[in-house]
Image 1 (cartoon, rainbow, N blue to C red):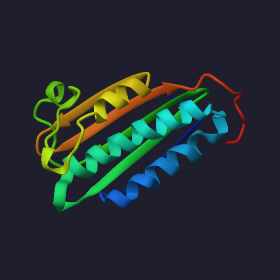
Image 2: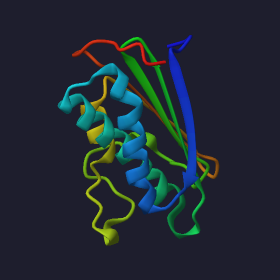
Image 3: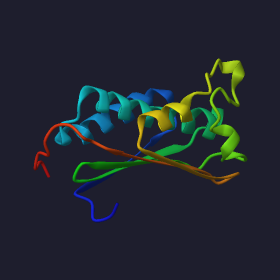
Image 4: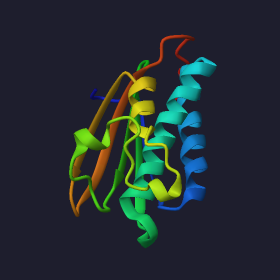
Length: 149
C-alpha cells in the first residue's frame, strides 16, 4: 500500500496505561472510513494486542517506547506496532495459540491468534536484542468514504 490518503505516527512509553491510548487513536483514525462496529472493535483489539505484546514481552520491567504507525488508502488501513526490546527468537512458536513467555502473569497466549483472526493480513518481523515490528492490514468494507482529509 503506497501513496497514502493519510498516515500518522505516535510514540509512547511502554506502559500498560497507554494501551487505551493506542485503542482510542486507532478508533479516531478509522472514523472517516465509517467502519461498522465490528470492524472498529476488531481493529482496536488487534492493535491493542500488538501494543500489549510490545509492552509486556518486548520490554518487561525495563520499559522503553512503542511506536504505532497508521496509514490508509481509500478503504484499506495498515498498522505497524514497533518496539526496540528483547525481540522474538522463534516467531513461528510465539504465534501458536496458547503460547506465552509469561505464564506467571496469567497471560493467555492468544494475542497473535486474535490479530490473525481480526485482520486481513499479519506479518511479524523480529530480531533478538533489536525488537519487533508487527504489521497488520484490513480492508474496511462497509460505510462510505468521507473526504475528511
